[in-house]
Picture 1 (cartoon, rainbow, N blue to C red):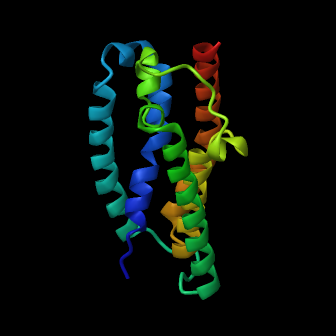
Picture 2 (picture 1 turned 60 degrees about the vertical axis):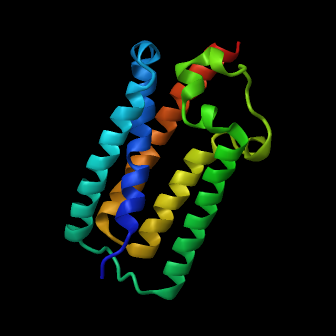
Picture 3 (picture 1 turned 135 degrees about the vertical axis):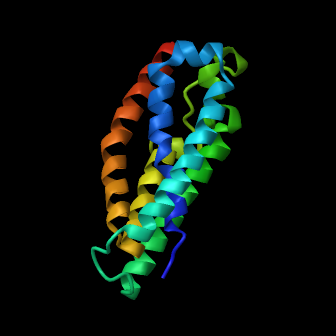
Length: 171
């Protein structure tokens, strides 16, 4: 049985890399702000091909037909998706899609403390984790487990760099 979980994986997996590249090479990207978006499109296209290939070849850790696991997985994915969209709505596209970092004078410098940011500092990243865990729970393939581990390792690193950059920009 084929699934579309590979598309979810392909969309989520490059995001921490984009943010690491953004912060590691910020002076370069600020001189060429549109280039990071073109690079991102290329990486997402490659990720789609790669995760499609992985989905076809990845073994199952457990049988994915347990109804409770599928329901829990989709519930986690729904919660994560709500967190991601709430983050987009609260931040607005310029902040969420890193334009505020690339062109800091294009938006007012402020730490957002409304919407989901009242409760957690990075709702989109938490949302990506929930979506990845939910995808793994509902599907049970090794590559989805690897995605979860990858996100649990890279997400705190990305958050650290974002907090440092935000601190420098807002203060």
